[in-house]
Image (cartoon, rainbow, N blue to C red):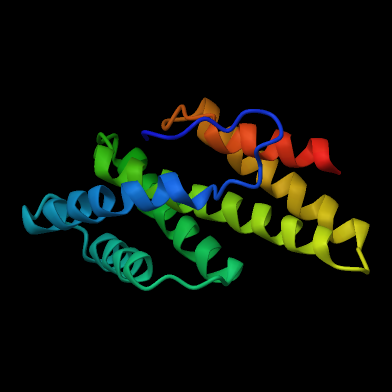
Length: 158
């Protein structure tokens, strides 16, 4: 992903911005993959189409985001079980959905910090999830540490 610099103390920048730049590329990649009939499994095709529909009309509901991320794991697992290469478009879609989970947690924590009554357990849980997702993105297929830097900057504010 082409992403701006999130150095220490800049967690106020919108971490969703780089993702917005990637949306068109992700959608066109999956659409092309489906159009070429490169995905033969009908369940996988449906899960990919559902994820495309979600990205075109996203919700702020973490459960929805997690559901589609889990579904991408199912699709990727099917390829792994068959010993087949996972198309890069599917890896990119999965990374996009993982990034959405991380961003949701960052936004939640930022909103909680602005409230008068803070519930530490909820913040800790959201920060742990954000850190997990950001680490996956920084060390995994995407190898992008933008969100990891944003999470560390937010941690510094706590």
